[in-house]
Image (cartoon, rainbow, N blue to C red; front, top):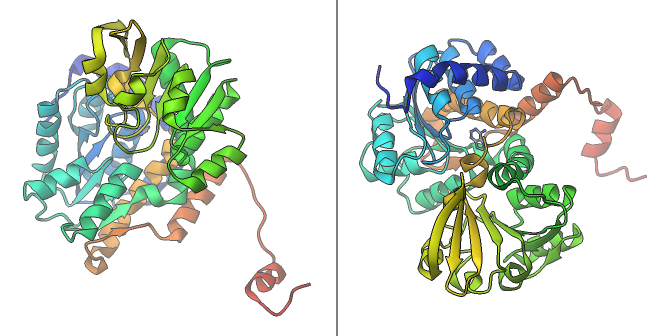
Length: 414
Ligand code: ADE
């Protein structure tokens, strides 16, 4: 078996944590039982955050008969005990070490592709783009993509006619983005900030850059903990939504002067740029919740600084020429996975059930799919939601035949 992990001795700790997460992933467990053996002979190369939730996905895929090889989708998000447990206790090949440098990160992606996968499973599209760049797409039937940023990259590849195989945008299932992006990132971003800094959120001025599903979740949770929340946006419609959701809305140039904390969640680069850093409030905490570490201009921060110290794990203090201090969390990488453990298992249960069903969808339909980005069909989304309700023990009403008829007719008004 092939692997590259930090320390095999961590395996037993990882095993217990994987079991704990698994207890909150009832939908995925049911799907694995229902489809036992159905993926027999399928090789899956997966580039995901190596967490206890990802471990449960890999175990479910294995139970369904697939062989899985894993690499990390971020250099800082690997939980080394989980990687060790997957290798030792589940026979899953893992190439991931927390804190790996850029070259090792890509070397691990390469090793994942040497598995000659039938399916690529991606979070951020680095695996898929690497396979395309180095001509390693032969034999791949299809891919899946977990996150907004990855879907944007893949849609650009499809638009430019360079995508070599169909990809399922798992992110675009409602049972994914409505819960994972909003409640998952909302909670885990606050979790990352708290684990890194141990500050009190109450009373702080807390700016969220971007009011997509992720930004909405963070703003909602920060407000719930007593912060005064500001939202910055470039989209007029989202800006009005934020305004009527009760948040202050203003440009970053204004917000950064008065904020204690700023979190970026836009998916775009240099949302906090040099001009913002020049006027940032002394003692400001900066964190990023977007997939890549491009949202805060780290080079500008380094250029403007006369001193840098690691003051706590995941907290770097930058002292600027005029003495102001900026505290950067998790090196500007996604703070929820760099400084905490990512989204809780309950939401990852639905996200990864979508991943699981996306594999089945590719295996069943690849002959009829074009080299495009697809959503999973609505029936699968609804099936996952229904199973989740069942696992939660929540019952809901059903439309009566009379109500169904009313909804489908245009004749009857009153
Ligand atoms: N992305 C965000 N949170 C995650 C988690 N807990 N596991 C895997 N991927 C994630």
